[in-house]
Image (cartoon, rainbow, N blue to C red):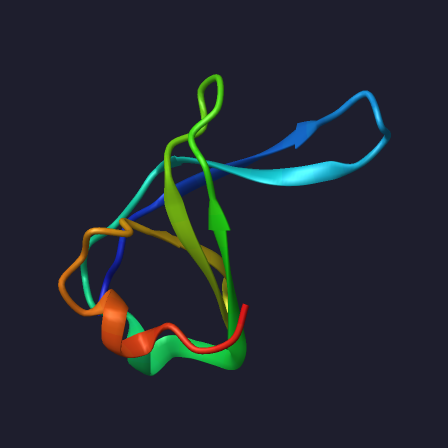
Length: 76
């Protein structure tokens, strides 16, 4: 399965680097998610609203309106 999302890392004045999703996917990537946590990204500057999941290949940015998201969200 091929999925598509695009993420960059933004540097903040606090010295923290945070992921910044600029594109998301609606594809169900549930089988590729590792762990039981997710984080929610709010839209800001060039970052879009997204749910971030960890996969073996890195973080994937998922559209929070994707139909499969409510069943998959676990622990923040």
